[in-house]
Amino acid sequence: MPYNPTLVAPMRQEMTRLGAKELTTVADVDAALGDQKGTVLVFVNSVCGCAAGNARPALRLALEHSVKPQQVVTVFAGQDLDATVRARQYFTDYQPSSPAMALMRDGEVVHFVHRHQIEGRSPQSIAANLTGAFDRFCAATV
Amino acid sequence: MAGHVFHPGHHELHGITVVLETHGLTTYLGRFDNQDESGVHLLDVGVHQATPEGQSKEEYIRRSARFGIRPEQKHVVVPVAEVASIMRLADLEPQGS
Image (tube, each protein chain N blue to C red):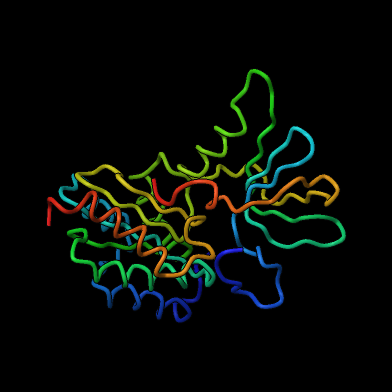
């Protein structure tokens, strides 16, 4: 059952302020990830305070890096249910968790950050994980 | 433990995905919830049973760290006397995949 929209609104805004495009429907997801070219980071947002509360600031820090994905999109687990299920179908090798982040290049997942790699870590530490992947997978396409 | 305690009053591992090794053949991967007189409570738990012909515990943990945990049980309580060790899954593998 989705959370109260009022509760999650600030968590959505935290993402859109970073320039992330919200994908709230299956059609949105398919438009963004179907036949995807270049690099895109998919951020699976969550209300979980202990993990997502650090994951969103981590993404903000990572996006200050000189090398970054061409696009950032986000689905909201527990809120936009169909869109989240659909997004996860683009990375079916990975068990669902939230928050989580998938870096995709030309339609393939090249780096994945699970919830267990976010829990208990500082935003700086999580951001370092992300920027390492950005350097490795996004440098040639920016 | 590295990291932060986000929920004051809870166990320091509350909300953290851990590898719980028992003194027997069973290893659990799951989110640590709390510990009380009944044992250690884990949520969304994957279970590995060591067998000679099956996947090794080390491979199971490695694959779970890379691809995530496939939860087989929603809630498991492991009596403290059966617990050999508890480690953060993230500490057993490099970040990212």
